[in-house]
Image (cartoon, rainbow, N blue to C red; front, top):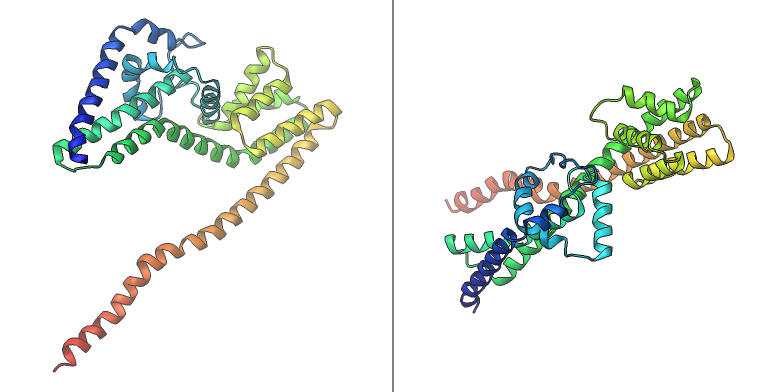
Length: 301
């Protein structure tokens, strides 16, 4: 039954692909309007080769369908994913949806081509799974980038807070302390880029509280949230920022030590899995195989 349905599915998918191709050729203006960026400049080059490869295809075929998705909650969720993963310079919401649509269609087509070319005889649910996988691929990339950013921020945060405290104690105000740190930081520092964005927001007219709230939204880390809340409260109550920053730095170092201990405890438990599955069977084979062979063949003599 499944083999009889596969030609029909192939014809259906081919028809959908032809429809997308023809309608894309007739809707270039709509796609171009969807890709207009607030800065008026082109998006930054993505760190993912797959996104760079897919971008022209998205512009040509799926962007005009992405703009028709008006689900407000979905768009807000995607916007938050792009902000927390640091991909706002690479992708906008419409382009992200275009990637999901593109790979949601391309993956089943690739599966069908491989199925007919190599005679794999995949069942229908396999192609549905491949379509779902293609739809989720941009989201998986965003989650991976978010995890990488958060790990980098957590490792840099205590050191940067110490520097902020030293700069404030040396006589600089909070904004000047951030400026001094940003100027001395390495170019690939994620946290330095975020602090630099705080300075740009303040320069453009945002209050310190609003700029720091934006930092909290972009990082989405409990430690950063705590730091921002304490700094905003110290501004409101008049407490010394240097003392607040020192206390926060000590707390962050303690939390990092606790996380390291927890990770070490989990590693000792996880190592039991390869030990039981791979190492112990090999040891048993090496020890008991000669005995078993001697008992089977040598005992008969």
